[in-house]
Length: 339
Image 1 (cartoon, helix red, strand yellow):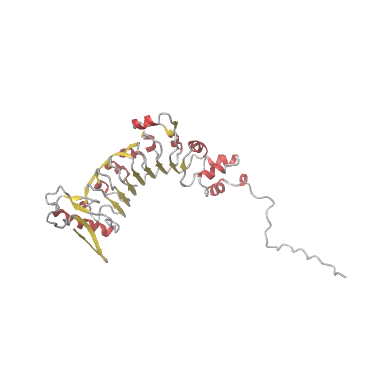
Image 2 (image 1 turned 60 degrees about the horizontal axis):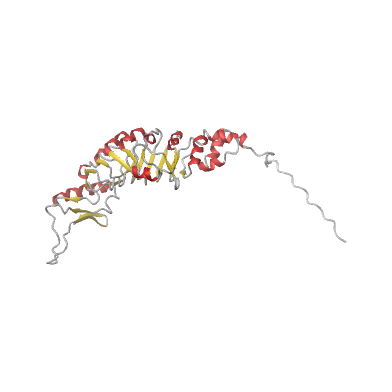
């Protein structure tokens, strides 16, 4: 005979336990601060997708979007963002794809104009609708000529210009970017004198104008930039100066990294005219290296073939090559230089 089964008694909830709410909170019940906290974890493209209600759509138009790298490869998306997400703080203008370009600027490259005459033309001026923009990168964007309005963004703190062969601008145009802290420019059509950078003296922290052959001036023009941590003028053939003029205790006080071009006495690959110059220059570099340990590790210098003290190899008598290459040498903690 089977024994009757008993049901286990239902456990009652402890008095300290919390019961689940009957209804979960909706977006409508969230405050503006709570919405900002939720959307603050999302990149711009996800915020655009998250606009599921009227409240979210309206709130997105006033939201200060946290800095996040958003690359514009589709023009219509950027156009929509100027209306729905106008407070974005960071954006990258990229290549739009074959057959598309932005409207030509002032003084465009004639060959590029002919090549792109049948391309679909887009309006780049809509970029100015992003009033809170702090980081702007122009990377292989189809821009041709000068665009002065791109240098009138008062809150911009970082500007990057790379792979922009037909994009033209002058150093003095940076006077419209008084909040600028970082400038990275490689391989673009920039021209002008670096003395015009002095308007950024109180804010500039990083200056990278590597291989910008259109600029000129003495690198010592920037020696009293108290915030400047990185200076890269390598490959800028129009830059001149002399490292012996750097006052170790006063000039470039915050500098942590420096790259100087061949035209600077003591710059990478500099060619000396006289052997007598070398000792003083290498001493100045050694003192600078004590402040900036990374300096000159991969640098070499040599005596110029135009020097009256230079001589060639006597191949007929098989004399060894002249020791005209100069470099630093390290022996444990000690550093020296040699021919």
